[in-house]
Length: 481
Image (tube, rainbow, N blue to C red; front, side, top):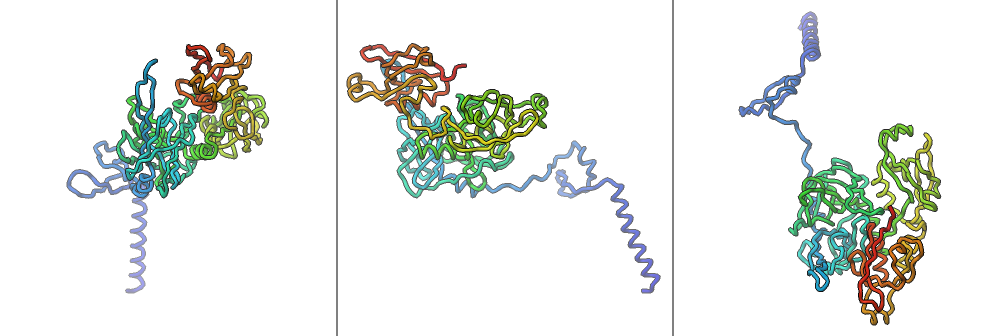
């Protein structure tokens, strides 16, 4: 091949490449799509035509399927069925007989600690736990917390399968999750869905101290799933299935779980103290809207506005004022009220957190020492006779052995009523023996205090005065509205 021939070949090659480049620059792009016309032939179709072709029936390629097998194999053996007969009163002379509450639970340790929902075991006569291998045990109630709908049980067993806690803060909307439980008293059932939302408040727990910051999923959850496990694809426990949102009382696409980070703190308190040591900021708050944020000079409506600061509270000690907007706690953003309540609910009185807030167009920081409802930084004591004195104005004591034998009653005696208090307005007198709270019988002073403390707002005390055959009833609200 001579020199002239090589030059001609090079020019021809460059011309061809240039033509291809110019064609691609000015011509509509083409893509290969699979036409579902039954002939099994791949065809070239212009992309611009494809997007507006309403006759097209093929879809876009989705992501690869997720493998749930490992997570299901880890979680299913650690989820149990719970049956708790409940005695309901049927009238003055006789009881109606027991009804049965059915739910699920999650084994947390090889020696038999089990978490479930408070509403599954509330007012139960006994609690029966059936494992995935059909073994049945009678469970002891270690403690319960109505404000988060969490209860802790214990069975006498060893070497049990159990789940480990995952980090519920790290889950993301759109992430795959599995719900494991015993719906409709069926055997262990696993359903899959995604995280639909976080920090949901659906106002089902009631009460001014309740914490609702649920993980919302579309995994199928039905009656009987309550107390069961919500796990990620690694088989880690990231929530306790608690509620569904449906008109028909069965699954309609919305289910809610207590986040594992909150549940873990409640369980730790119940195991250590038998009750929850709750921390409070001592404020009343409201979510921001776009108009409020604009008026305050904030870039967006992410934050919680303080509408009241209680005297001697943790917030007051830290210098917070009415009108401040709380933006971050321990450098973590808190955008809405449920997020703040869940965050603070993970701490005990006496622990320190940092708070970042907005005031008069300036970001400020402070440190606060959290307190309990009585503005104390110490651990909450076990039920005492003076525990309700400050809030309600009554002091209680246990019945003596002689009083129990003489009156044939169980409960607690009201030893004093403070003038001007909430209870004083009911005309209750010292010497009243409280035998039940909101229809729940109490055997001693500790149970009376716990029942009053766990009541959402309205409290109904039933009981007797010594020497009088009539039963008395006193009603009041813990919070004056």
